[in-house]
Image (cartoon, rainbow, N blue to C red; front, side, top):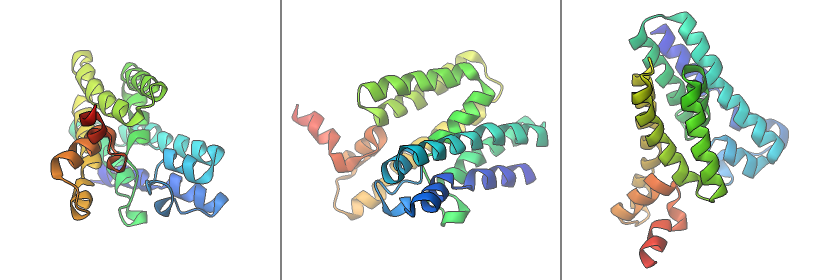
Length: 209
């Protein structure tokens, strides 16, 4: 229980909220996409503050995974504790459970657990950024990394699967908000799942093509 709570509290430290607020006076929850993450911090508070925020969120995963592995040698508990880091980032207690998408700490955890998996995730993400489809690339990276983890027989594969499910859930949870705004469920679900940005109507644009 101590390990799980520790992981959650580490993940809950909202660097992407703290730094923009401290150095730019910007509340990222009310700026840009409203997401408490590095990308929105860059958009709302500038490149320097945003990048540093993202790096610190990433280090939550690396340092958190290291500390938790020191705290417990029980694989089941460690897997839940690693998951709790990402839960803390996505639903931080310090910001009334309004957090980020969980990608930065997940990358940190992947780097600690399996550098090859980290490399796979980053490579897919870089390609998607070049192709200007970063959200879709992130979704592909989440799925592909989980598949590769199975073949690499990573010891903490359960943690990776659970985190992947959480990252996908974090994207589609906003479907309920879209329904309240009159969006159709299927269109909203696909847009949230693949593009994480239904306001761009990307799914409908594809249908028109």
